[in-house]
Length: 55
Ligand SMILES: [Zn+2]
Image (cartoon, rainbow, N blue to C red; front, side, top):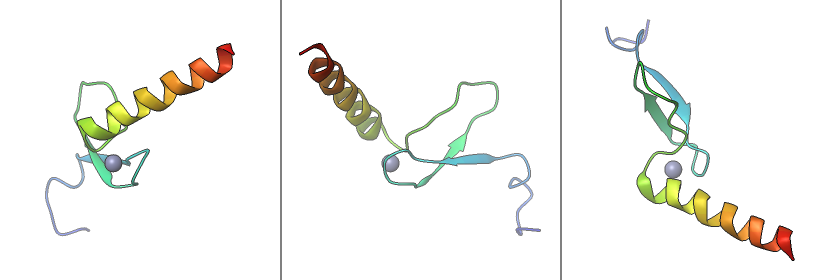
């Protein structure tokens, strides 16, 4: 028991960047980042990676 009625149905995943628990909404795709900023950060890193890959 965690002391809350909603804890049983609320799932969380750690943010890819800061490991902060991100609540996972039901019937929705997985949220891997705690904030829009961290989501964008991932896109930037991916873009840089692709750029370096193409060199
Ligand atoms: Zn984060």
